[in-house]
View: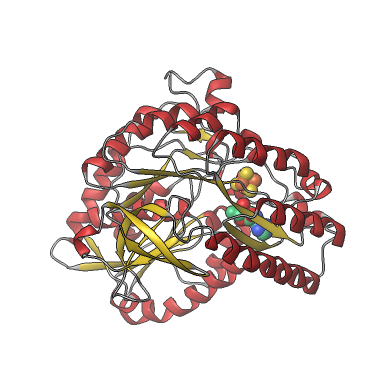
Amino acid sequence: MEKKDIQNELEYLEKVRKINEGKNLKYYILTMGCQLNENDSEKISGMAQSMGYSQTDNISAADLVIYNTCCIRENAEERLFGKLGEVKKLKAAKGTIIAIGGCMMQEKHIVEKIKNSYKYDVIFGTHTLHKFPEDLYNAIINNKKITDILDIDGEIIEGLPIKRDDNIRASVTIMNGCNNFCTYCIVPYVRGRERSREPEDILKEVQDIAKKGYKEITLLGQNVNSYMRVEREKGTCQSEINSFAKLLREVNKIEGIEKIRFTSPHPKDFTDDVIEAIRDCDKVSKLVHLPLQSGSTNILKSMNRVYTKEQYLNLVDKMKKEIPNVKFSTDIIVGFPGETEEDFEDTLDVVKKVEFEQIFMFIYSRRKGTPADKMKNQVPEEIKHERFDRLKELYEAIIPKNNKEYIGTNQEILVEGYSKTNNEYLTGRTDTNKVVIFKGNPDLIGKMINIQVVSEHMWYLKGEIK
Ligand code: 5AD
Ligand code: SF4
């Protein structure tokens, strides 16, 4: 794919910076949703800083308020409208600039509602994130509301400034969009079709991150293990590094990076080369995120997940054989249209069999424009909640069982900082993403160390330095 020249955008950054010079302005950003949105927010923050704003956590002190929105489930909408109601007063009192971006802005009915009922200055979408400086400039100079949404897939943008939230762990987006069209999911409609960043750009970003002292990276995308597939099929990928497996192997070679994670993959794209790369790459976490969504073959078909319960379980077995000590985490939706008690029990059955380390559980949420929203056999709310509670109960019975297996073991962990709940302790995570707290010298922050696990406490393990 031809890369877009962002010279124009960089010039707008400079123009806004000149307007803001000497004013000591502040921005406040609220990110909703997934890690991809968080990574986008780091780019929005990078642009805001380059335009002369410094970050504040206090919204009342902000001259620019930015909401980076998500639309994967309905509650995100209610939350945004609540926030927009609150910020109205701030705008009236001190003229705060309000910018709203992200996935929800790709939905026409939401943008209409904001235009009709709320105060804002700039609305930008997922394909126009890089135009934030230009849009903000036009809003300031012309004192006009700007709505800048593109329906066509945005090009891959390289070279935007970025302000990362952490200085030990960093995320790197490797692809945008999704081609899978799971019937419940709005992502393909708001993020567009799959398109991958060039491997050279990704590797350069990871090298830069490593040079800055970061130790852990997470490769991000809606469907990471189909990295470069579209480009491979179209013949537009010039590089030798034309698959996720090859990318993993290259990232694994980068000096300074100690831990590599990735999310989210799709079970259908776990080809042998990907499994072998996870096995062979010493820095790649052996916790594989394998979104199940449902354990029922019927529901999986209706979800357009293109695998059956048996194929999923076979994949788990295959990975267990190939990758020593592999563990799994997953995403599960309960109450998808047509889900019967029997279907739900299939989900519970898979959970019992795989004994996931981590489960992200969701109650099915109807999304406008998706095929599942039009399905006639929607599950009543009380049944959805009852199933959610039963799944949660099962999960909470599995956690201590899994945790007990860690007691007495040695774990190599990256020390992330002080524990948020008890600052007498430092904290880090095992390769399998379990939080471990332990007493130690703060000089260890940012280092890989060995810990012996001494006890388990549901959501964390306690350890001692070896
Ligand atoms: N309702 C509930 N959960 C959803 N997800 C995606 N769309 C929906 C929806 N409409 C969940 C899936 C996905 C995760 C990121 O969000 O489990 O893997
Ligand atoms: Fe949504 Fe399915 Fe794509 Fe994931 S793979 S983003 S659940 S459509």
